[in-house]
Image 1 (cartoon, rainbow over the protein chains, first blue to last red):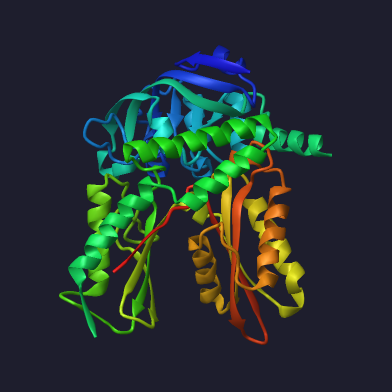
Image 2: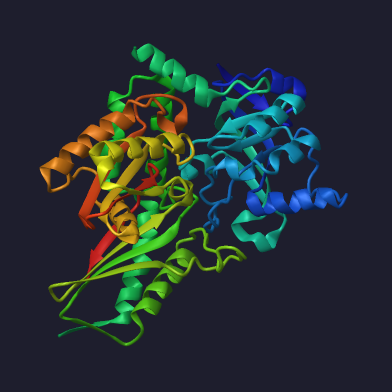
Length: 185
Length: 280
């Protein structure tokens, strides 16, 4: 199914998504990779606040290239999500709901998604030039010293994604491949 | 003896870093497009269309194809009749990478220590591979290597008794384990023989060879065809969403090895298999 979703990603909107759905996201999202997640989880451990309100937030696992003059952002495709698996359940426990990346997730993350009603979206890995087109605004909000890994607030319009894992734990990586192999028989 | 100034090498490396990151080689584009034509699974067709659209945008607007502009792997075939003057060869290469990544607005993705981390800020050092060959030219190839795929690569030291079947099973095991992580459709580089380190180097060199070429030895050329078919029967598909196109190419490079061993390395690359070359 093709769906157009306006952020923030409330529990109700999240529950309406199914693994395999094509989704076009519009609204504010936040960028973070390994180093930024590590810092945010350490801040939470110390009882500090995050640089953005995590409630119903969507985090994009991306480290863009530097913007050329006149560009909002450089090429901005997803990085491998598995490196954020250690931090994702903590982020969901404070309200973050959407994750955008590519690649497999650990069972612990999928369990946390079911518990907190999280959604894992896939962006096309390696399609950095194409995905940058849907990013209309980019603002650095924290961890500037991390360079490409700094935390940015992005405004995206009709960002093309696919639901990989939904709030019930259905997984396109398993279902899509199985369905393809089944029809080949 | 032909003199080549180090500055000239810096200029070429700078240019190649930018070109390789913005413009996908024709052999890779052709492979993606022919796989798109043969793909029979809807979601896979959609993904391949977006991949084509992506490299067309990169070509037209001179922007990086992928945000992981990689570690700069620089391969030099240096003619033995060449004398490099006017500076340190390695530093000339690093300076080319430094300038290319800065002036080309490419991402700096290198940390100065593998355990303690810390970005070097200029994407140096380059990974330099040199070979001395006959002649009076220097052939330079820059192949930026992303780590989503590099992380899914493996090496195994087989007993010779494992034979060809051991190699075949291992290639499929590596691709299966990689699954959706390395941004499939992937390119698979296989290195067999040599020592532990040489097998890995052969696998990396296999990724630099155009995927519309075949191994010169018909035995391995046939194995390339057979294993590409087997990889594409796994059903992983573009991005791991299912489909026929799990890999767009599979190259094998080999060399002699010890009587007691059969090293095999499998280096995985994504659909953004980049490389650009120039001859000085």
